[in-house]
Image (cartoon, rainbow, N blue to C red; front, side, top):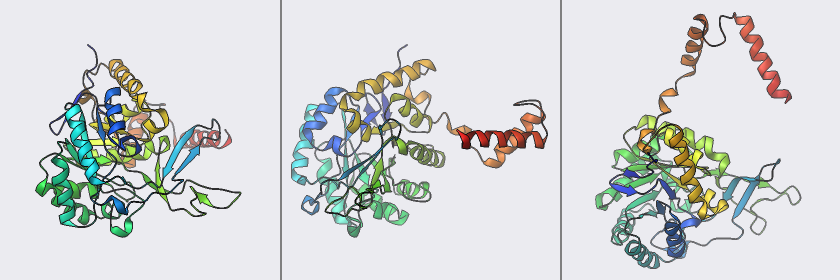
Length: 367
């Protein structure tokens, strides 16, 4: 039987679990329509707010980290702000998109200042367009912190709980809270959002970073009139960090749907996120660097992974790898038992084990 890539999340039917993440790929109706035509299961639009006049972007605003061996882009930083297009224009475009694509999942990413009336106004006016869900941007790591927006709000569990509560008072559609990785323990703000009624969690947003220093000019990158600000780091290099955060959220709140993201470039990458507990996955930097048409490869590669393991549905392997995370003390005990019983590398005394570890360490440091 062919693999079934469709998923049901919060009552929403996604024809496949691949969602274009909020950012440049969802910057206006034209590119969103193109994405739907190419086969993406859903799109989270570029974050919108009530007053776009306060949003002024700079140029350049992107920086790249390249592999020293292949020159491939493995990390990507941006200092781009949320959408600078008028809110009223977005309302018109969202309504038109839902008329044209009633079966595609259109998710509105919204962000506002610490103001109950503003949050509730943007929710009520946006949901009237027919969008399928909200994603609350409580996590953008750069820009507008002076207005207590994005990460400045999302790193405080009390603020997260309060804002999500405001939204849930008036939202008639599912609400996902998007988490920042720039915290010590991501399950704390995620838990605050869930207590306030969030229907799902999105994770992770970008990691606050400095991409590079130009060693000729001694200026940090990307340089705007000789200066810069720390920006949001994304791309393949962040995937291990994203997977750890997904694991922590999924273990803490196993019944809450997660939309996972962070360095997904292939169908196999996506499979790792499902195994960690994600229900859908979002792709942003991967689509920017590889093109929107990559959706065909993503679906084929994920289906091939499912066929290899005889999984018929995405739900067959969501969280399947979570039981294999434990404590270091438990690892030591498991290895002790295995070696004492003749398993693993057999019965060996402590000196032999130490010798093998030393050899492994030497090999790592000399190669």
